[in-house]
Length: 493
Image (cartoon, rainbow, N blue to C red; front, side):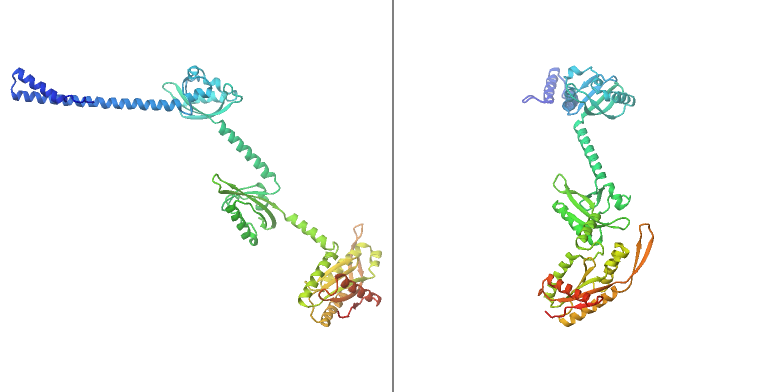
């Protein structure tokens, strides 16, 4: 209790009064002191009682203030709170609840909350409320509320707990329409991604920043089998010769956020080697750091092989698989350039089969093609790997020998050895297996010879055409001399 400023203390006042009484009544000093002590004790007890009452009043006031704070928290909470009866009649609600339903709280009290539940959720809501009252436990459900003026129901999360003594159910209702919309959008995106990943002609992998697999499209089963790839390192199946280069490109993507375009060899679960082409891209987190790397890969083995076949067809004869005239021209240019650098001679041998036409006339073009293929194989076996054997056209072949010797005579001698070796190989009998239209197999033995013209070249002292013309002239000289022989242009440049 608060003492007024300047007023005597209760004990002093009591002592003064006691002294007056003693004087008035004629009491002795001893009696007066005893009575005074008794009165002081009573006063102290009374003061303690007053202080205790004051503490109780302060505590009660704090409880009232706490209660008001809780009332404010309830009334102004962003979550809608309702207290309802078993028939969903509203007993109590806060401002958020009134705002949710779009009417003042005074008008909503006594109305049934079920009247605001969308038709497609009414049965589930009724079952939910019945269950909550029956169990008396904390429960939750998601329903749709159809509000006045709303074009479509809003999705809400209802959490309930009952006071079974008062037969009241307390509901907390939160508008989750935005969350549901995000969930629907994410679900749609996930479905879109799944459809794309399952139907794309290629392979999709999502990797963390250390290269571990987080996701692999189902198509990876073609390469890796049906084993679970989640969490495995994505570089293990890359060909060892390409692995370091691919890992380095991945690290650069993680560091810079820039995707890489790579070609590398991939070893399948069956041990086959496939050529893969990959395009990578980075996915960043909210702080701009690379969180994931998405890699889209295509198997380009067939495409690469087809390109090689096209390239081969462009520069090789389709029948014998030997280089064609275009390739011969290119290699002759390189041989001349090499001759200039080294000072060594090169040689050109021009071959024409003797009496080739009768083979086609007697046995058909299939027999002639078989003879040309075998001839190409025999010539190729007579030269070094660095030399070139080309089909010039029809039954004509050209052999280019490079880097012979710096001495003309020695170079010519080497060329003669090769030319005679080729002539002898071609003159061996040919055994041709010809399949007739009726499927029967016919064995044909044929003897064939060749006329060969030889010339040497050094540097660019003659043009390509001049070198070819000289070798061609020498070949015709061999023809005129009786065929099955070698003729040489021996003039020194």
